[in-house]
View 1 (cartoon, rainbow over the protein chains, first blue to last red):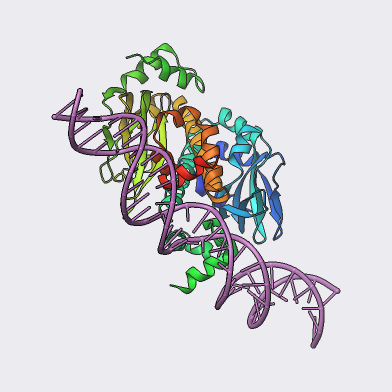
View 2: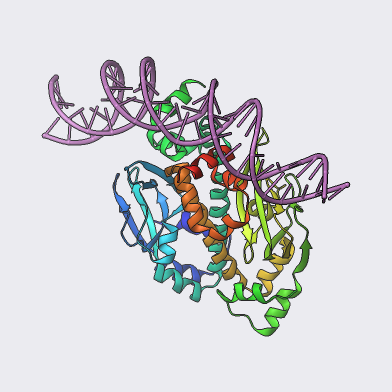
Length: 190
Length: 190
DNA sequence: TGTATTTCTTAATGTACCTTAAGTGCAGTT
DNA sequence: AACTGCACTTAAGGTACATTAAGAAATACA
């Protein structure tokens, strides 16, 4: 267990002193999770923001008929949570599960708020994180509205080739908003 | 032309001194735009972040066949720009046009960066703005993946009743990702 | 005030994608 | 090694939505 990867992630946007680094890492809790562990379930309080140190996770939503929609995949060096419910202290509307054995660092809402007070530079860090998340989601909305299933699949492969290796086609299909059967047909046609 | 509405928007998240308020407003430029003015076009540099003081705007994307997808509507008290291209100095991938005669305040990327330096509290303000934008887009992705066209229409009416009054059904259809003909059928069935 | 343009609707036909079902192959468990 | 479950595929039939075309109604413009 080392903070190196996480600290490099942060250093891409803000510079911390040794003391600040020390304070920041003291606010984190480290967890190792076996494969197929549910980190968050719909309806539960979502109190933690998670940084993926190693492994892979998937956030998904289930509709009234039980159909799953994958909201995001999170591999090493990604941040993941049910952001709306985390920020607004609402019950979670999604599930987050490990796709393989994973290790994460977690920051609670209380400690994040404390961090903003103690080291205001983190306002900048999370601003940039949120900017990137926003523009990524917006691009996904545009693609969902304007591309065919086949085009969205190609785009996914280009954008996340490493994720496409790790996850099942069923999961990719649920990310694209199509059935596994139709993804199979799309793949055959290439 | 008054900054009152904008300053109230900001005061919801951060407190500014009189001097800070003065400095902030000095960075803005005010514009009055007639109906159907293109504020931004695909391919152009996107140098400004706009706050809608009055009126209504629409951001949309056109695909290779010329089909429009509405990315967002922005009415009074909303911020709008092609955020990805604004932040990364890329050519715009969307159009932004006024739906009616409108007035806006604009902040250039250079001045926004200056603002972060001069008044770091704005890091917090825009962090919160980006958080809200992110969670809104994420919810839209979830709805696009899991709801039928009819359900998305109902959700739109509930979420943005005031916008539904102002814009045409053609524009609502392009926001929902369906044709105007099908929206007409959906409405008839209610 | 009339004329042009665009919006909205209706309806017939078409298609992208879904549902169901059945079969194959593979990984996990005993 | 056999059993179990799950992922993936294939294919037939079904549905949500698109396309095209045409007319009516609203809006813009000269």
